[in-house]
Length: 495
Image (cartoon, rainbow, N blue to C red; front, side, top):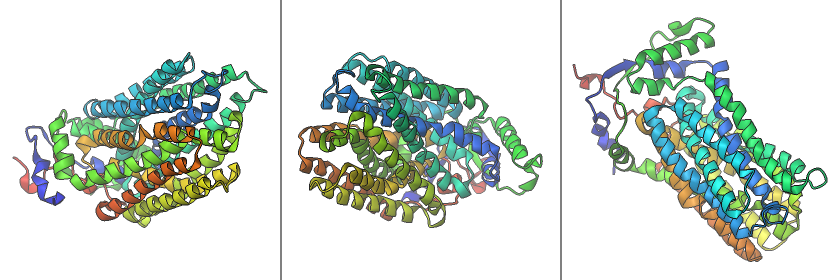
């Protein structure tokens, strides 16, 4: 089906107020300023927190299997990881829906508060059931953050640098991973702390970090694009004027006097039925691309990073309190990928770079998995192999979030992000830690390789789908990549 042939769907719900605005163009024309740095710092913390959570969950897995922990089985640890991912799926869907209705700013306060509460409670878990229960709600908070925060970042960062900034922000997941790995080396060292106390203190790190950011977010404004959509034009223009004044030292709008304007119909909310029509009738090919990219990277990452500690301890005899050393190396490779490759997503283009990073990481995973299967790697060499895989896979995974947050209309952006995160995690992520946990528990290397091979196959399939139907969104305004559902051309303006 030709996606362009369904253009009239963009003019549904035409009973709202007709608004003409240059706010999107003015936002894209802004030079980089302290405001954008604040956006990156306070909203990008979501990925740092997620990296911290995933890392700590992996790092303490070995301790949790011991009596000093909770005495969990490998399967129970995998189940708790799946509970975290299930919570992320439900949280992303529910809070993504609320984000489009109530605003970006309200929801990124609510979701962070949920994360803070649940991660603090994880530190007082008393058995496998309570641990999985609290991890579920930690996932709810993190999943909700993805929708609220991703939509805000896309709508506030200028188009010319949206790709590289988004990749770097998503790559900051690995700063959180590094923090978690470094902390685990101290908190899980039996010579420094009682292991029964150390793993509980590890989870309190995330709560302390999140509380600091909760206070910093007070200074961020609501998305002007969202305000325009909800007929709050004066507020949107006031926010943009303030950002312009800060960016240009008081010159405000004078430097963009001919900023192109767009017209759209305001709406209080977008019915779920229209969301479905947009995703499955108006943009079915984009929907396929989004699901493929999100599901494949979710399987690869969640299968390996929720179980890497188990591989190191069960197959290489690495002590649980030494696992963090290996993760520090992995975190470095993962962060360097988006940092060094990010600019090429804005220059060489989305399709070329997304296809390349997905395909290369898939092929490398097969190679590293094959060497693991034959037992020719040491623990250090295994970690080096994973570093190489994730240098490319991290950029690929970050580009998946970039893609789904920029190729759908303004009215459903947050819900689209949530839906693809949920679909991808549900299809590719929720079961993967449990599956790999069971394969690792067999103690047979060839069975573990089967899991790695499946992840590689999914990455290669995603690369092929992106090459066929991917969108060239580099350096383009969001409204050009995908017009709002309520966009009205001048010739169709109702007088």
